[in-house]
Amino acid sequence: EMQLVQSGGGLVQAGGSLRLSCAVAGFTFDEYAVGWFRQAPGKEREGIACITSSEDSSYYAESVKGRFTISKDSAKNTVYLQLNSLKPEDTAVYYCAASRRFYGGTATGGYDYWGQGTQVTVSS
Image (tube, rainbow, N blue to C red; front, side, top):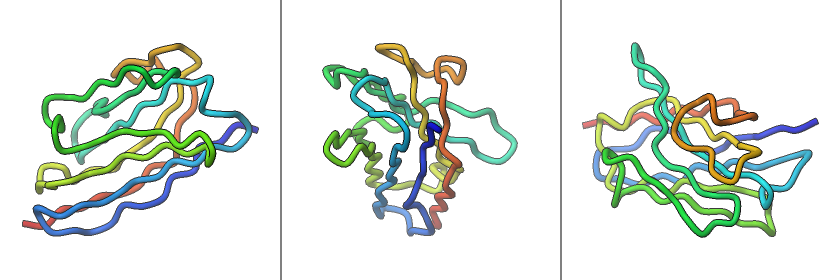
């Protein structure tokens, strides 16, 4: 059974940092593109970062560019999202997702498997 298990998240003050992890069971990340999404209360889920299966290209939404970094650790079969310089508007439930495609993009329809979500709350 293919599963994505998330960890990390929590409560942090504005300006602080967090690292979100997404561990895979049942398949290897090497063959999948990976994306990170977030959903704030009352808003749609938005794609904020994604990386191709070959890891040679990544994309970031303007709202997080320069502050967030997506990375893969193939040895651990884990994907990370490093969140720096956090702002209150970053508060949301964050999700990782895997796509069978070379590049999943920023739309939820481009992904086949999803993590359970983890809450990030940034206080002002």
